[in-house]
Length: 325
Image (cartoon, rainbow, N blue to C red; front, side, top):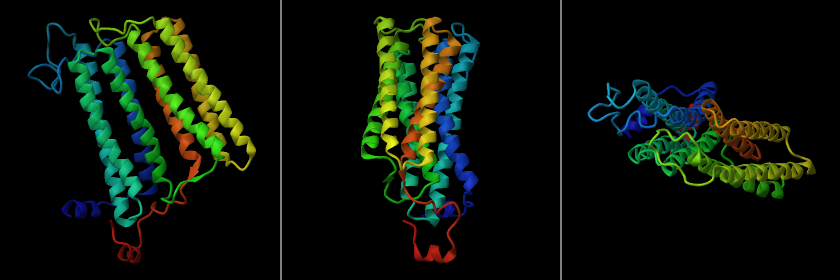
């Protein structure tokens, strides 16, 4: 009750604040994966060889005879960025909880908000295990893949700030909804296959890290083949929309998925042909995050939960008649 009373004293988050927090959640959840790729391609994965300390006896980088200072600070900076993600996640929870006090029907919003800090804690643990396992390729893959649902959920959180709480009403035909489920499954299959290519590739985060002993050209073919399957299903989904009655917003989201997915495919092909240069790896990781964002945005755009009523605080009579749950 004490914590609830403290939350009630907070100013009610305006429409702009709600939107800003939602966007910040998407950006930070997606961005931490990109900065992690910078750590990997610069060989800084063991710049801080222990966890939660950077080096034995110190939470921050200190002079070490076997570790370059630049590698220490690149890895340590990535760890510090986790703090930014935590702050944004905490703000999302506080905003959602404050909204709930005036609008008790907003329980779904609060649940989505709580998944943000919960996911950050999970990622921190997985990051620590990855360091302790000396960057074994499969631990790096799990660490990256665990971040992908958080990007998806952050998009859902952003949407939840701007929609109501009625049961989801589909805006596309039944076949379209089923195709969209298949599209989402293929998206994650592409991401999983991509981690195997990375595991066999030249950028392991440290020169002494074990790599996946498999032919990278075959792994790349599987990865690209799944992307082609994703694009085929995306085209089929578009055909299901031709039956008419689909809102303009769905078509706009659909176009964005095509633009981002094709750009990601071109980037991946060029990256492979050029021998996987370091900078392009990070851009490819950014592209994978954007694919998740636009696919999740398409997902949320194909259903309607009614108008949002929580962009402004409830009036005093409403608070009296509707006690917070």
